[in-house]
Image (cartoon, rainbow, N blue to C red):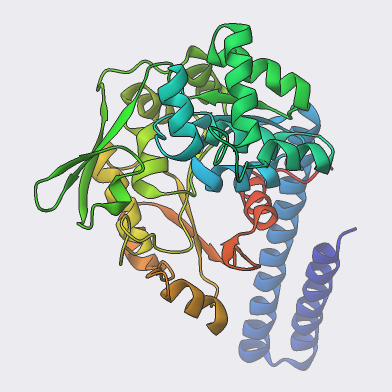
Length: 383
């Protein structure tokens, strides 16, 4: 018998003892009141114990019945952090990755070979791969010199070569996933060639994911060119069958919103019975989210796609060491303020706790994030 039941029965016996003693001593009013209160407390404890046991039973039944299906949507390094944590659980994972990147190695390959940018896809494949550390280092290796090679990632070049061998980008991702023994699926959000535009507060329109943070003005809104885009059928079916849809963390305007600007993806999230969660960034990003609080992040998303998209929002509430703050302040970045009351007014349930891992900089801790997601869904860790 669980501890809750022992405590409840002990309290119940105390209450009964008080009532019996009251009858014997003929001290009815005061003794009966105390005894009644103790018995009520016992009933409450019994109810809590029953609820906890039933919840555990449901968790075990669900965990053994089928695997949890999770769709994670985003881009950049933020999505790969979430995937690294979730792959340690017995879940079916699908990563939906933005294809609006036009900078660095990805931008050069996109321009030279007329292919989608491979960088964010590469990061997600590596995050989900069940490979030796040396192979992961190889895929993430970036050439520092060499005419035409400097700045390129080996993994990006690998995906470019696979695209030409297989004939299309989706097949290249699928075959690379097999080579790397990827735990889950990695899907580009759309097949089309996508460009990202930002409308700034001064009225200017800046095009290019890599150019937007450098514009020097507040971003009013972002939009995709072309506007009419068709997501992969596999993306829509994964969302429809999901137990949870996770959005973020990542650059708000250049990693998170590009996926949500595709109407069919947002409609699929709204129609799905999945629990929708948004993981807010830990720090503000210069040129994108300067001075934005957690509620401002959510308001920005809702301004683009309409309210009520998310059930939960995960925000970091831990204090930062002074050393970390100084490093970020030198880059004009500051902790995102977790204004919880404002978030409640936006109709989202807030989970505010320590989600941070400190190394050189403060980053989301993949383990803490994954454990929180799985816990909210009522599943127990099985690995």
